Every structure is written in C-alpha cells, then in structure tokens.
Image (tube, rainbow, N blue to C red):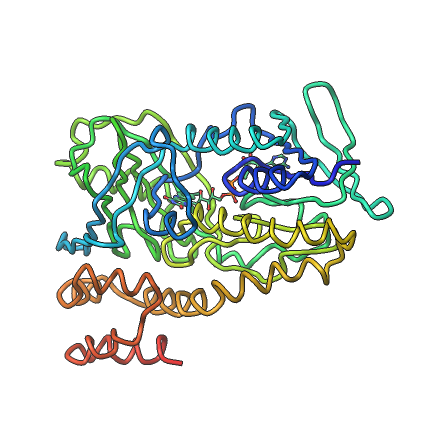
Length: 390
Ligand SMILES: Cc1cc2nc3c(=O)[nH]c(=O)nc-3n(C[C@H](O)[C@H](O)[C@H](O)COP(=O)(O)OP(=O)(O)OC[C@H]3O[C@@H](n4cnc5c(N)ncnc54)[C@H](O)[C@@H]3O)c2cc1C
C-alpha cells in the first residue's frame, strides 16, 4: 500500500508528485505514454506573469523562445499589439519542460512508471486498488489517495463516480502543425480572429527556437468543416507567412473550456485538465494545472496525516480553487459568451477602439470598462450590456 498514486505525468501530475514526495509521502506516477512530454498536445505558450505569481522558475532549457507579447489580428488583418508589463511570456519546449518537472519530482523521491496505462480502479477497504497495464503485464497497485492528473480525457474521475463530462459545446477542437520556415516576427505570439478563420475560437502562430506552432481551436457546433480544413485554409491564405514553411509535427487535442465543480471523491482528487481547469477565454491550461496541484497537495498532506481521506475532508481543495479562481472564471465565461456572439465586422470595430492594454485587462477579467469604451458603438454596446453586466 502506497500513500499516493498519480495517474498521468503531464504538468499537473509531475508537480503533484514533487509536492507529495517532498513532504515525505510514498508517491508513484503512472504514465501511459512511452516518453513523458511527447507527443505534445499544446501550443506551449505561457505568460511569465502567471508563472511568477506561483513562484515557478522555469529552467532556461525548457524555454524555446521568450516573447515580448501578442499581436491580435481582426479578419481584415488590422493588428493590435499587446506588450509591456505583464504581457511577456515564453513558448516552452514541452518535451523538455515535462521531463524537467518529472526529474524534479524524482529528485524529491517520487517513483515513475512509463508506458503504464491505468485501466480501472475499485475501492478496497479504505484504499483504492488501481489496475495498470505495464510492459510486464497487468499490475494492481493499492493507494490511500489516487490523483487523477490524466488530462482532458480523464477516466479517474469517472471511475470514482464523479460526473466529469461537460456539454459537447464546452470543448474546443484543437489542431496544430509545428512548422519550420515560418516568416513572422519571432518576438510575439500571433492570434487571428474571425468566423471564417476559426469559428468561435482563434488561430495562432507561436514562435519557437527554429520553428513555430501554427494551429487553431474551433467550436465544432459553429463550424462548416473540420478543424484540419480550417488550418489548411489559414495556411493557404497567408502566403507571405507560410510560402517556405513545412510541417515537422502534427498535434491534435480537445480543450475543455468550461469547468465543473466536483473535483474530489473519497480518496480521489482531480487536478489540471482532468478537472477541466483551463482558462475559458484562451484555453491555456498549464499554469492552472500546476496551481491546482500545488493547492491539492496542501490539502492532501493534511488529509493523509489525519488519516481522513473522505470527500468532505478533501473538499477543502475545491473551496481553495473556488476562492482563487471562481469569480474570475465566471467573469471570463461571460466574456466568452459575448465574444461568441461577435460577427467579423464586430471584431473590426473592437480592433478600432481597443488598445493592447485594454485587451490585457479583459483577459484579467476586468470587464466593466468595456461598456464605457463601447459607448460610440451602439451595435456592440447592447451585446456587451446583455452579456457582461451582472
Ligand atoms: C491544441 C492545444 C493547444 C494548447 N495550447 C496551450 C498553450 O499554448 N498554453 C497552455 O497553457 N495550454 C495550452 N493547452 C492546454 C494544455 O495543453 C493543458 O491545459 C495542459 O497540458 C494540462 O496539463 P495536465 O497535466 O492537466 O494534463 P496533460 O498535459 O494532458 O497530461 C495528462 C497526462 O496523463 C496521461 N494519461 C492519460 N490517461 C492515462 C491513463 N489512463 N493512465 C496513465 N496515464 C494517462 C497522458 O498521457 C498525459 O501525459 C493546449 C491544448 C491543446 C489541445
């Protein structure tokens, strides 16, 4: 019987592993992939500000490129640049970043098993018995606490009886090429908006050391074709950027853009994408995944020490999350509802009146100033009042 079994060695799983092992708990991580960090399902962008707030120092080897900010493009091509304090960030090399996080956990005493797929779990007395398919056959591992860090397709929550599947409209479909030979400024990330570009989502170019992640996320309900077709079209329509570019990797994945609130069951906690904790506006989830594990570990330590791993005891983690992110997430969901109503002509209007700093404030869930800014744009003012006001 071990103390903690963590399913999944993404950012959430490895940070949880480090937190628990460094507190002296016997911790094991099982990861289904044969290589931690690969293949990535991510554009790899993070804000420096978000990591700073959590006190995370990124190993320079994990950073593919430092960026000064973002350039946002309306459908006509009109650009708004966001740069300055708080808007800097990194594009990571996730294959290195995730291995670095795993190395830190191992240094703290955690054990890892790769190419090991959790296939089910049952309650056994006060513990969970988790079945894992490994290279050596099926193993049964008993743990006092199971952490579901198994990403957007999480099974752990389901096995524990939690309702973990949202409405289909709460998932975005993401598709991406990593491309070499992209001709764009490598100092910024680039975000492209418009119904014909990426319905109810956006397209992106995130520059790396020698290449760039070029992708998009769409809401399938609003789409006329597959995400892949939109991406091909986006590349074809930006000849000056992609004339000499070729794909060196292809990635696809779902992004859960709405959070559900039940993150714990008896002896079980969900962290990161398994609890659908991504930012509902831009779909970034790395920072929130790491933060959720830091919070969950604080609660798990107390629960393990007291011998009480009941749902009621573990719910303190849900409360901590709600206190930190609840209000902000609600506001960002409102902003998302507003943005989802916009036509291409509305994006042009917004590009006319919003500066980079304004857009940054919106991403920080500061919404009320937008109403004042829209006074001269009656068509948008009505929508903003309907969706953004309390
Ligand atoms: C196209 C796309 C682009 C994105 N771009 C960004 C971005 O630029 N910035 C950002 O911050 N976020 C981005 N995200 C979101 C980000 O990738 C996730 O929020 C983040 O990876 C969450 O970390 P996690 O550890 O919770 O889950 P994951 O990173 O998904 O890790 C889950 C791990 O669990 C393993 N696993 C799953 N099931 C089992 C099982 N049964 N047994 C054993 N192991 C299992 C998986 O193999 C995986 O390693 C993007 C997502 C997509 C799809």
